[in-house]
Amino acid sequence: MTIYLKPHKEESVLRFHPWVFSGAVARIDGNPSEGEVVSVVASDGTALGAGHYQIGSIAVRLLTFSPNEKIDAAFFRRRIESAYNMRKALGLIRKDNDTYRLVHGEGDMLPGLIIDVYGDTAVMQAHSVGMHLIRRELAEIVKDVVVEVSNVYYKSEGTLPYKAPLEERDDGYLIGNEGQSVGCENGLKFNIDWLRGQKTGFFVDQRDNRSLLERYSRDRNVLNMFCYTGGFSVYALRGGALSVHSVDSSAKAIELTERNVNLNFGECERHKAFAEDAFRFLDNMQQAYDLIILDPPAFAKHRGAIRNALQGYRRLNQKALEKIAPHSILFTFSCSQVVDKDMFRLAVFSAAAAAKRQVRILHQLTQPADHPINIYHPEGEYLKGLVLYVE
Ligand code: SAH
Image 1: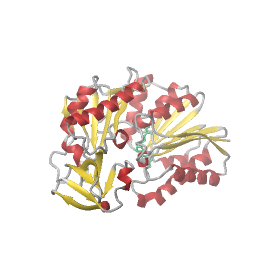
Image 2: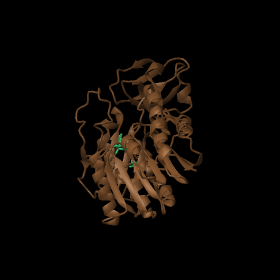
Image 3: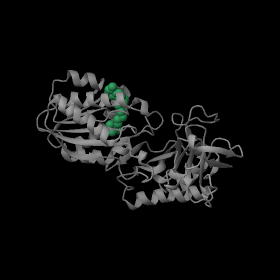
Image 4: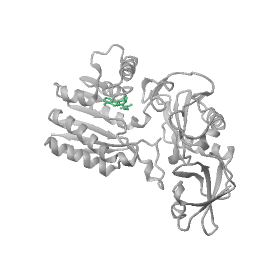
């Protein structure tokens, strides 16, 4: 099975970009079915690599740029071992930190595959048909490579292309069954619900940013907007915050936040949670908080939504900046992949100007080391954050 590219369309592949767009394809030899491994060849006949074929705007997700490398179980084992060894070497896998991302798609040269580990359970998410078809092999490899893991849960109903004619796309355990449901992050405990929760059950990507927040929370009155599992709230409480208020529009998220606070601190009078819309909460709030976290869901999921998303970020940040106490700190984030660093910064800049506050940027935040960015795939940088000091 071979995909031949149009003239000059090999350039991005020669720069190791892992996607071949359908518009770059001149012809396809051998009638591959979705998810099959295909070779990619330039218009002059040069072999460029191989990857998973799919019908859609991304026609091939390249797995290797070595035309002679065989894509078999041993190949995936090498890649998963390399991902595990890096995290181990970086000190991310510890008794007091058993919650981490094992595989981050293109960032680990496995486009289409996400795997998060929570203690003895790995939660695997396929974004491509190719990864879906080999899910059982992948699960076996993960269990072999990661000694701590004895259960592998597959959760791809929401991430597989919905048009692909796939059988057996249901979520469920590929290996084992429900293991421990409490994960440990930097010594803090979290109930993790991969069955019903968002994404793989927990937002592992905010770990370093939560640690930074912990350092700044002593003696502050903290407002954690869009709290979901209460990650930032729990760190703020450990950091010595006077009070922490958590807000999320989902009642389930509020319940989860309360359970996580109790898990770490028992009955905790410093914490209160509110099931309410963030914008409405900010409009009505009377209290002047001196540390606010804004971590909304992605406002833009595709390029066409960028304008509205930027307006959303501006409006949200303006509301917070208008009401935040003097001499306070704002942690503000965007996880929209299509909104880049500069656009987000401009939206926050406009919000600060409209709120007429004097603001300095203290930190520029991104995703942690277990969400690496493939240097040839800058699209992989999706999490952006600013920490502001508001005079
Ligand atoms: N900060 C979290 C992740 C946030 S995910 C963490 O560290 O884990 C985004 C959350 O925003 C979801 O829980 C969702 O329920 C909530 N949400 C979405 N729209 C909202 C709105 N308009 N008001 C309040 N919460 C909202």
